[in-house]
Image (cartoon, rainbow, N blue to C red; front, side, top):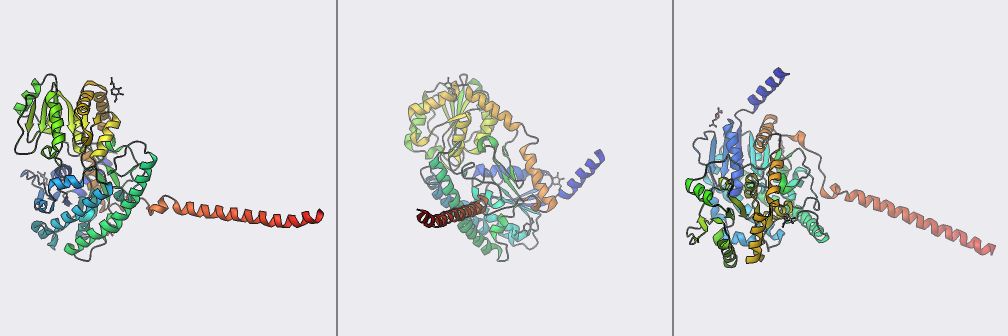
Length: 510
Ligand SMILES: *[C@@H]1O[C@H](CO)[C@@H](O)[C@H](O)[C@H]1NC(C)=O
Ligand SMILES: *[C@@H]1O[C@H](CO)[C@@H](O)[C@H](O)[C@H]1NC(C)=O
Ligand SMILES: *[C@@H]1O[C@H](CO)[C@@H](O)[C@H](O)[C@H]1NC(C)=O
């Protein structure tokens, strides 16, 4: 037994050793990139030759097996961050946000293909790889699997849209598992069910008939016309890695092709810088940590929101650490300390931090759960609204809608989370649940990546697929209705005929 497993293990090690992996992660958002970077770094440390295309390179010289192609030049095609906030603001309809997102993604795809250094790579006839890992949120780069003739792993730094679930054949249901861009958690009202169903059908249509064909055209422009159709590559991904921890995304069915992960970006705790350490040690009644993450800047908040927040935070009996990204930091008040950057993960782990006021980004929530710090969620863009509702539903934090914020509501939210110990208890429980796993999520991700390399794809994991109308049995229901109609019609006809036959007799006997 021991010998057999030893042989198997060494066999596995030999076959998956030193593979050439191409990772293409084009979306210029730091919180997305840290998830991809973590996996690429780990794969390179395991002896694979990893080439990573990213706008946020690690630039770590000690990672000798990791080659980074810096595409940060693509920020030129981005609209200013203010207009991103506008197009992705909560008041815009979800489908408009999706259209804006896909338009932006197309421009990014094109800009990445135009990057000089990346061009050298994909035009090089001698460049060879064993595997492509590409972003699943916008699948334009899947085409490189056709260019290099390699299997592809799709990866998302958060969940994936319903259309991605559908394309790999995973279960989807507009009512049980609404799209991650809709802010629905728990049981849906009838109106929400209708909206979610219409949105699902629209998004499947828009994705398959607009997004994919357009992205396919862009890929052909740069990679040549002999590629398989992008939609076919998308239906052919070997593994889809999603970053969906169960607390936020809930339990749901996954076919073997889809591997849910979580906590991918988490690194071991480091000691705090001395000034922060002593500041927090001295914060005896406790401290509040305020950060809106990388995509929403505190300095871009509307004056009303900013003043309300400042007013409340300057009156609480706690030390406040506020991450403020702008170069002109506001004047620090007695208890508020502004910093351009703060080591969030290590800071949250300090026992004096009582509450984390967050925009509700997935990575921030994960760090908060690990540190057992309950949250006040203030969602602005993207999946944040859904995440924050979920936090409130789990009882590990409360929601503070920034568009309706008042001094009283904000103060109540903060004190509720600090004074009511249920939030702390709940978040402790969730941490225990999420950490109780057969292996770490990073090990899981590495295993499935090397699995695809070893088997040169994973078509055997694919489950059968159906178009959505067959999946929802609309053809069976239609056939059943038709049969019922025919039967009713026959019965009706029989009654009519027998009535006609009976009546003359009746007349006669009368
Ligand atoms: C680089 O890869 C080799 C094998 O290809 C491995 O032995 C070595 O440990 C790796 N080094 C680093 C720093 O990742
Ligand atoms: C504490 O919070 C929980 C969960 O939100 C709530 O059910 C409970 O009533 C609160 N307790 C107090 C004393 O406010
Ligand atoms: C599907 O994937 C397999 C291997 O993973 C590959 O051989 C095949 O060419 C792919 N087909 C398409 C249409 O991408």
